[in-house]
Length: 244
Image 1 (cartoon, rainbow, N blue to C red):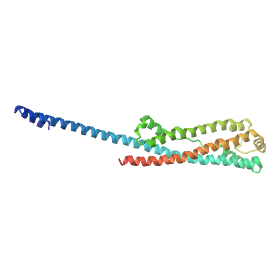
Image 2 (image 1 turned 180 degrees about the vertical axis):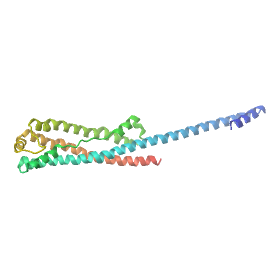
Image 3 (image 1 turned 90 degrees about the vertical axis):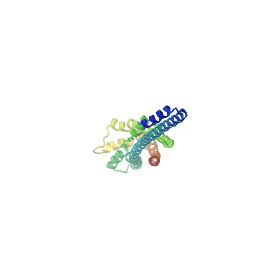
Image 4 (image 1 turned 30 degrees about the vertical axis):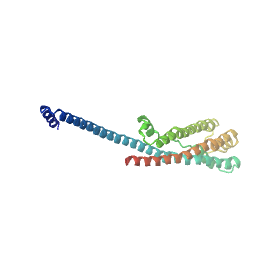
């Protein structure tokens, strides 16, 4: 093809047809420019496809993390925290108010109240997205939802959990250790009386159940529909990107 155009140029020059040569040269330049523009357009299209696929991959990874957190962390943590609060309510009425429940029941209720759920939320996919650059997301609404969830909601839940663990260790767990009360095998009447008569322990348990755990539970229940909504929005956005 190049040899063909070269022969045309040489023929026009040898025949001294400068005007026709100029017209031909202009046309050749236009063809070259068009070729470059087409090549650039194809390159941009290919790069766009690559960027879109990267965006889809990030969204899918975040969606998997959110689903896993919702099913295996948030939901069971809500159930566990509700049981903790319920256990204190039963202790308050059955032990502290009337002293009408057996030592074995007291043991079970204390284990139920003191055994918290170790909430571990997965932020790996979101951290990977931040490393790649949040600008890769074409949907500003989802970008804002992700920043709010991971930057605010997740952090606040973690702060509440850290506060619970700290105050629980300082005010409740340490009490059993300092007073040499151990209930793994059985609860003696003597240790039961220690528990009933200590107003500081009762106050710590009451504060934990009605304020610390209740606030933690409320936030967990608040974050659950936020996560589900974001999962649904990401699903729709992935569909949009795949249909581009």
